[in-house]
Image 1: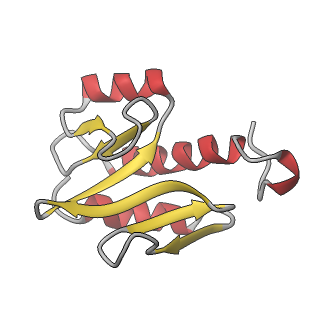
Image 2 (image 1 turned 120 degrees about the vertical axis):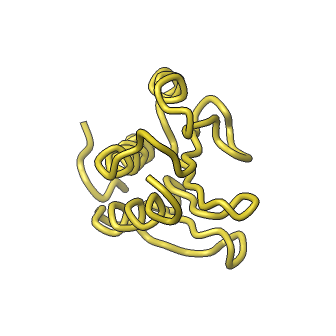
Image 3 (image 1 turned 135 degrees about the vertical axis):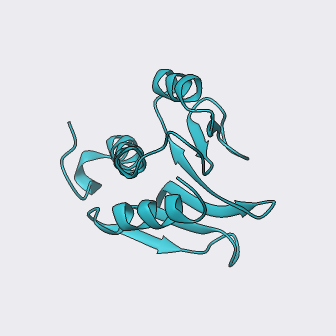
Length: 121
């Protein structure tokens, strides 16, 4: 998957999630998606390359980094709990959508049940 395709797919996936909100709290070059005030997706460019950064379960993040060369530890984030995805071979639209949904669910699970926009198992 090349160019801005990963960002377009990530945005499409995030826009479909309950109570997901988009904003630019870090400036116009950093689009952020939050749920209940908690970040689950960041989109920006690094040296002209479009990237997305997502929350990920640590063991799953490690596995993704082994399988996909274009998935690395989270750029400017906690390297254990976040991953950054660069354009590259081997990525599919389904994988990007799955990563966004899993990031969202991981964040929602950390929100008190009374404030959650949806039930997450």
